[in-house]
Every structure is written in C-alpha cells, then in structure tokens.
Length: 422
Image (cartoon, rainbow, N blue to C red; front, side):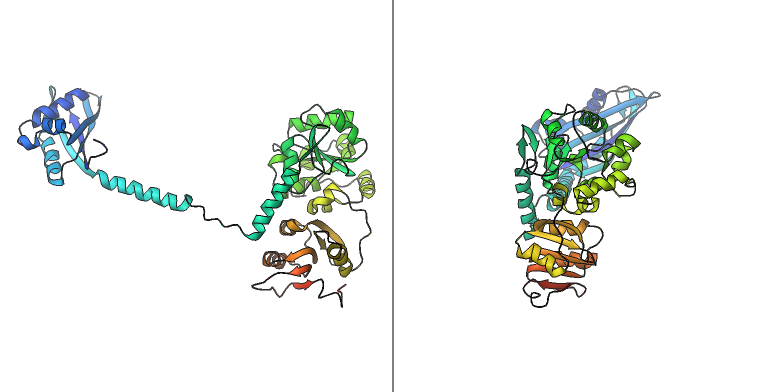
C-alpha cells in the first residue's frame, strides 16, 4: 500500500488518561463506522486496499496520553479530505475523553518527486565523469606507472633499480616507502622490512653513502638504533612526527630529505627528531664541520636534494659548463631528456627528468633565472615560468602557444646556436 498511496493523513491524538495503540485504532474504526456511508466505510476501504495500515505512536505522561496517527490512502483528494474530517469526530478513546486533530494531508507523490529532484541534483554533480586529461597529465600518469613498475629486489628486499649501482642509497622501512620514492623519481631506496635490519642492508651501508629516511614514530627510532649498530649511516632524515614516509607528497618528501642531518649530529648532539623532520626548513640545524666535510666528499648540496630527483640518487661530480649555451649543449645536444635550473650566475640550482619539469619548477627554491629543457616547451610550463619569475627558457623545440608572456625570453636551441646567450 505504501508504494501506491497518494496521500498521507497526519493527525495528533490527545486523551485524558492512559491509552494504548490498540485503543486508538479501535476508536478510529468504531466511531467512524457508518458515518460516511458504505462507499467510505473505513473497514471496507481497508479491506479493499484503498486505505493502508493505520500507524499510531502514543505515549503517556502525568496521566495524559499524546500520540500521532498516520493513514495512507489511494483515494482522490475529495475522498481523502472527507475521511480525514471524519477522524475529528472521535471524542473518546477507550474509557477516556479524547481529541483527534488532523494537522496535514501530505501528497506522497510530491514527496517522492522532491526526493527524485534532490537525488538528480546529486547525480549531476557526482554521477558523471567529466574529467578530460590533458596531454601532460596523460604523460605524467604513464611516467608514474613506469616508475612504480621499476621496483626491483636487492637480495630479496624491495628496492629501486639504482640501488645496485648507485654511490648513494636511501634506507627506508617498507615496500610502500620505496614505491612512494619511486613515484617521485627517487630510484635508489631500499627497504629493511621491519626493525630487524637484514645483513644485506648492513653490508651495503659499508660501501655506499647512506641516508636513513624513516617514519616519524617509535618504529623509525628503533630501526635507526639497530641500523647504527650493524651498519654505517652518513645522514638521517625523518618524516614529520606521527606520519610515515609513504604518506608524504612531493613537497613533503623532498623537504624532509633536504633537512637531513649527519648521523654524527643526531647520535652525538642529540638533535630532536622534530628538527630533522621539519618540512619548512625553519628547524634545520646548522651544519657542523663534519657535515660540511661529508657534503664536500659527496659532491651535492641539500638544496640539490630538494629539487633534483637524480641528485638524491647520484650526486653530481662532473664539471659544470660556464655559459648558458654550454648548459644547453650538455643537456639538449647530448639528448639527456632532462631539465636543468640555473641561477643568475649560471650555477645549477637543480635538475630532474624533463617529464617532471612542471612539478620540479613548481617546487624548486630559489626561483631559477634560466631553465634548460631537453624537450618540447609547452604553454603550461611557460605560464608557470612566468608566474614564478623565470627570465629565460632554452628548449630543444617550441610547441604551439596561445599566448607568450613578455616577461620570459623563449628560445629553441637551434635559434641561439649562432649567437649563444651567456
């Protein structure tokens, strides 16, 4: 009956005494019998299904009973209104004086229509997938998939593909941490898979420059303690307190690596984990003499770590070109598929895969003066360069531009070959 009902009659019930549901139902049938004739007799309507079940909720307090009555009907408007009016003729319920007052006749179909409209609004907002991926987003997703697929094993442990041949490695806790680092282009991480450091990792740390990159919890502390006993650690970095390496986004991950400190500083000077894990750089401890010496040995800076995925994996040791065109030749003519960021003096600020140029430029600090790209320069990267204050871009080729910011000088490498900028 509920599925075919047109109207719902709602009435309030008041009785001068304690009554129950059965008393109210009995009063409704008994005191309306014969009142409206055979065609609107409530018992007949109920038997034929034109009137649904009489729902009553009633309770009593201080000798008075109060309740609510609902009757569903499939009658027309006139018949429903007449039936509702007949309910107000009830004066007694059980042994008590009583009163029924019809407060509303609800159009059940209107309520359903309202529900349909509200649901339709929700479906319009959430039910359709209107997202259209740009070319850059498609390529970025494919590259990310390839990076994740690059996960390998080293002596049975989850590792990035560069662990076996890189001069520097990053030791993390689990497989998920390795995948997170791979997602952002760091390919030289290896997982210890628990607080019991495997012998393979301990042996590896004696032959490489090692950064322990651990969760900001008690588990990270335990791994660091055992790793220091069975292996050799050069640097320590932590995720923010209470979080895990696998939960970090691009900015948070490289900020944590940028704020790494020499292990001697953590072990000897008792540097708090919160200082090592600072994500804004404000809590980074001042470098010690040992820190400066070790960085000189490694040949890379913390700033390079923050902005250059490969700088994390393999420190730069080659002699840098002295001119912008020299950098363009080294990056573009050699087909490196890289992007390089230079400051006003032509010094390298950072470097990453060309496919991640947009993300790298978005996070690199300080803002570069020149960008050298082994790839096709597109509108999206030009716009970001203008927003960030880049002065010049040299690329292997130029794409189609709907607008070209006047604040950024844009060159294809063949265009500047005759008169290379310094």
